[in-house]
Image: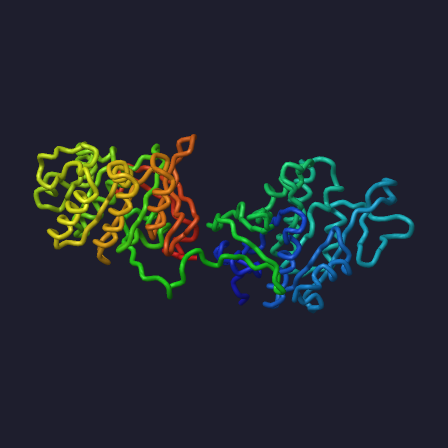
Length: 500
């Protein structure tokens, strides 16, 4: 009985395999596009070398270079070009004459200058290319470098798409191989649309590009699409090594040996997964927004989570969290605001005058930092419960000024115990850049949410001791608790709370 075929095929690049949740889809065609010198051919040969290392039969098809030129190109790498399972084929369109149609582009192999027939040549068409390549089967992995060399077959993108699709199916169905195709990507200069056509035709697209960072050139890799694969959408940097391309970073957060934080899952699955297990406990968290994003559902779930998990809540409300609004948000979770105040489970320090300050445990505006520090300190001393602090940082900054807001923030850190949770909420556009940067620097975890002009809301993780740092997830609202859904980062069903 033959073994089950693999679902994924290793690319030979560890980080890329991780981004693809294992590798390229088995017996499918994937395009690697990029400008000159971005590493397309190197990645293609590295893909074949990974197959050679596991016993696969591999075929490298070049449409632009002879075998000698390829050997020179790969001389600085540790690829085994003499491996018994590695085959080379080179096909090239060159002017000539065919018996049937006279002058046209004809098929020539660059490795030996082979001519098909006496005086006349074989037309450079998909039919004859297929017939020529059949001699190399069976194959497990195939590279076509580059597919741009097939453009001479046709002068129109529609027919080129048909020819490219037929060739990919020939590789994957008839030769039963996993195929990697390279193509030049000149961005807006893709005059004939050949690369664009291949992007629609192939099963997946990996894009290589370059960018100046502080005037130094850097190369990058990103997965633009991969059908059926919950792939990582973040860009990684690549560098050339003797083994081929190396992607970095392999992880975007601290290694376990350096972590001393704890997380609390707050009941919003996508947010908890994005943040590496939930909101950081025992340290500061910053929730940034753009002033347009709806935060009510976030606040309602955070407050409900805190109540149900035995926290005492300290609230410095935002304008949105006026008394009637908080009452409605809590009621949606079957929690009574009145009961929370009466049982001293909720303390409100109202710096914006949005609450009834005659109610017990609601404190009015504090004119100085010392007054605010005294009130917050007394709340801390009078409670024997772990605390969940939701602080409108903008109100603190506007009430106290930047210097005293910093002093108050230092006191907040002093009051924190390992079981407490401290979340600051801020709109960066309404406070000074320096004080906003101070809050970001003081936070161990930063979540950022905003609304685009089309009305779509997103949540990202710019900073965290673990989690999908740099990843962005869609936010949507639902009709049942927790009333909000955050899109899961890639691969979380198989790898929850991943820190890579």
